[in-house]
Amino acid sequence: MNIVLNIIWVVFGGLMIAIEYAVASIGMMVTIIGIPFGLQTLKLAAVALWPFGTAARSSGWPSGCLAGVMNVIWWFLGGVAIALTHLLWGLVFCITIVGIPCGMQHFKLMKLALFPFGKDLTFS
Image 1 (cartoon, rainbow, N blue to C red):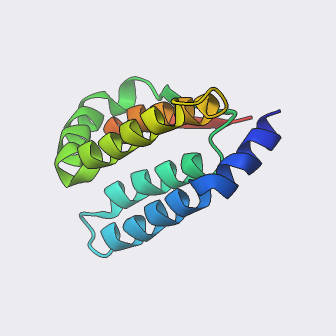
Image 2: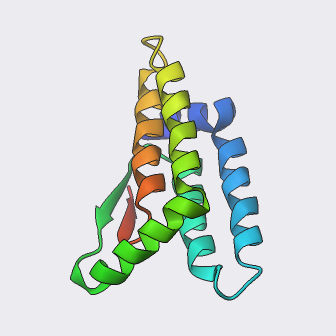
């Protein structure tokens, strides 16, 4: 079922979101300081391309304090704007019963867009 939902997701905007994240990632990786943020944007691109069956879990203690600081910096670099965009699209998709699964994936992406550092992705 996840494969069917992912194909529907890609057709109805998921590919566009993933490309947007990939382009932003390349832009962030121009400077050495931006490389960690570009890597997190690539993480968002991977989930945006294939969100059904993907789970984000905390990676544990070693990234704790540094991940918190990087998340705060991330909020100012665009994390809040990305999260608000996913909130808007999640609400739009949840208007209809058919769109609720896609809306829920936007809410999952919203949480990941707010706190990308210190997360590990698992694809099933």
